[in-house]
Image (cartoon, rainbow, N blue to C red; front, top):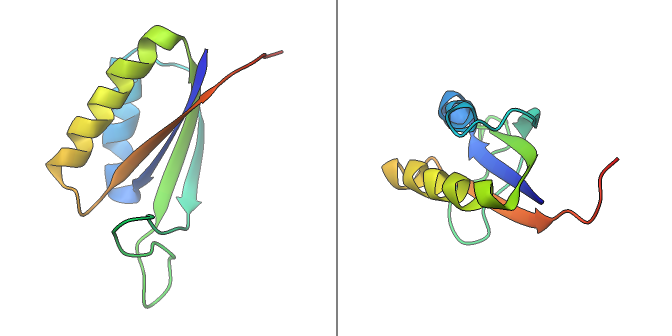
Length: 97
């Protein structure tokens, strides 16, 4: 199993949640307001007067065979508008209870 964390501009919230539904990924945790800045490009997302936009984040744990389709869908979403931005990070899950 793998954990996939998706961080995205709030403008992409409906699209990201649609991708999860479309790929039959039911379980996830969602953070509505996430501050940050990309490591290579992009403006800060801080919810301030200077940097008013905010990110959101979703984390899910999926079977290995769902990771590549999810990453491919996220990559296509990012390519639609790279300035808005969406990133995904994958970790191995050693155990769950």
